[in-house]
Image 1 (cartoon, helix red, strand yellow):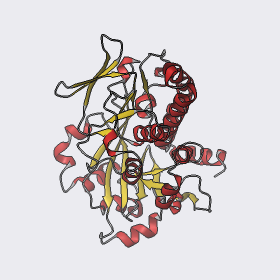
Image 2 (cartoon, helix red, strand yellow):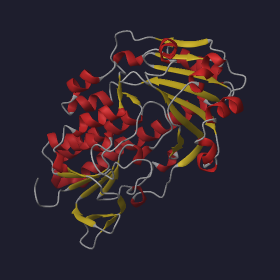
Image 3 (cartoon, rainbow, N blue to C red):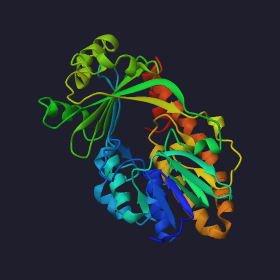
Length: 383
């Protein structure tokens, strides 16, 4: 790795940041990635991701990683079944041979991207405290403990919902949606696993009614992630910490929130076996993506356009990376600022659309008449 300060600093080694790193590597453009995790083996977010044609898959193709992705992708993971609280089928989509939205575990996608860039390009254990312009006009990054790296021509904030780079561009901050996901799991050794696998299949199984839902997703190792989504106060998990960690929590949730739901669907939670984790849903307001370009800094992925869950997040982020890398290549490093301007002109309206889509999607799933709204939506999509 060159000893001189790289021109570009990428904050965050998630899918968006690593995709940008890989694309810059392919284009032989100097960069460095700063990541708060202590190492590549640190436990990251779980879950599974559907990677779409025209966005995430396009980025993987341009990065020369599509064949490796296809070797790991689960095409049967595109199965999608929706039922109501009594178990009545609302929608049942089975894989039909198309390859438009195969699944891959988030950890597996991250490892695929990590393996595609030289290890020396990533600085682990670097938790960003702030980003600023130094006296010379270059960009600098301050880390916890006071250490500073400076001399960058461009800092790219790919550091997620609570980006430390965002404040240089916009004062906008994520807003809590009022919805939280309570996540647990069903392992393959669970005594009820066979029944669960027959009921939920190879992809996603969703139960919607009464402004709440139960979502089950099959993982690459055959286990299932289980999510209960509820309208809850922002700090509910912290305020109810003792209850949240108690052995009776599953029974409490089912009794308190799902008493009139069929045991056919609530048993998916009642017989789960993993610890519970709380994931409050946050998003940026759509009008926050109207910023004026600031030389030396830009954002991509959730740092730019954090949205409520709609299946598009990682795809939008990786496509951001592709567009930014292509603009840099087209304009050349001598015109780096112009490249960023051109990237933002494309990304900002797309980011607004992404946020609005997330709001609409979660609004539909968490409406009192969610089943009715979902049927109308599915028909409009030709499902």
